Length: 185
Image (cartoon, rainbow, N blue to C red; front, side):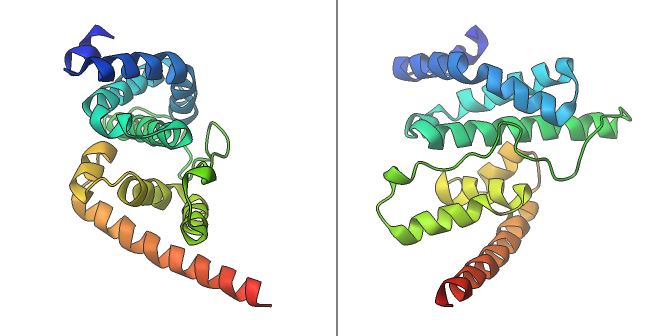
């Protein structure tokens, strides 16, 4: 943990990092195991996720409760997926499903944080998107990362992020239009 703390200068960030470490390390390990199906690889993925957390403490410190948890889940899942991709390129076989269910169960944003009903509806719709679009849309719209930052966090090219955002917006628009039709009846 000392390595991670060396990346931070603000004592408040160090204290928050310790709290995050104590609170989420078990759940993060569970997410990584669900993706990788290997305890040793999962430990590596969690370490990588904590490194990303340490590097992004400015953004994480501004998040509260469920929003922070969502952010950590996304970072952990993507760290595990990055490791999976690396192992796959090296010829290592890992039992993996293309669309992973949420390994920690269904999680939703804390709606009491938001005052606008429309925004709440949008957030709920984002949660219903497939994982690949949901994570990208959350990082972009809810956590306000740039496409370049998302690309670095997810281990993909920036063009891939742009494509996922575009496709995610189309799926989101279709979902919201369908919801509107259903409520008009």
